[in-house]
Image (tube, rainbow, N blue to C red):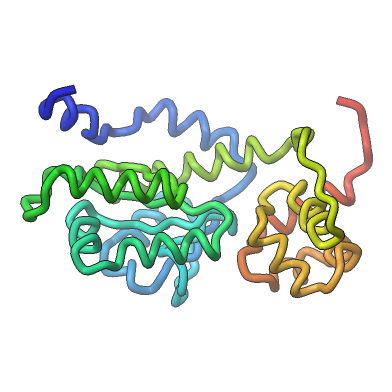
Length: 242
């Protein structure tokens, strides 16, 4: 692939409205988001509210936005992405995401190869590859702040849709008791290894986690209203064959 082809492949495109509507029509209610207070001047908060998202402003220590208590987004303009490579912030932020969040995403608004800032293409590509392959944090591109809001809505709808059914987990069977306890909780929609550990640290046992109300579950960092209600729904709903 030549330079022109590479640049063309990285151009972000406006999401067709029909796809946005498809996922929004299949949603179970208004999306909720916690947004870091430093994001407010960017205008993203106003765009989210205009898009029907319930927004809560807080000071965050990890990421810039938490979507429906599930997905943590580190949001950067293309220019800020380049600057964060130069000043060393990027990899510290990505490490923090990976350490503390079960479903982290790096969202870049604009084309990082066309910012006008002095950085070689190989250095930019190296940083992107490091984030995705070494830290295993997905990188998502958007065309604008408005486009970012649409992307975030789609991410949440897709995640919630896929989480409604628990797929059988074949193969791995933990032997240690503590690992078994974590494994049990990770079978619930929206619960990954980090959140499972926080739940056990908070409640003390698997039985206590499973007996907790939605309100008590939401008292644990990383458990939003959607995750809490989904856990209770799985536990409380009467069994019926599909």
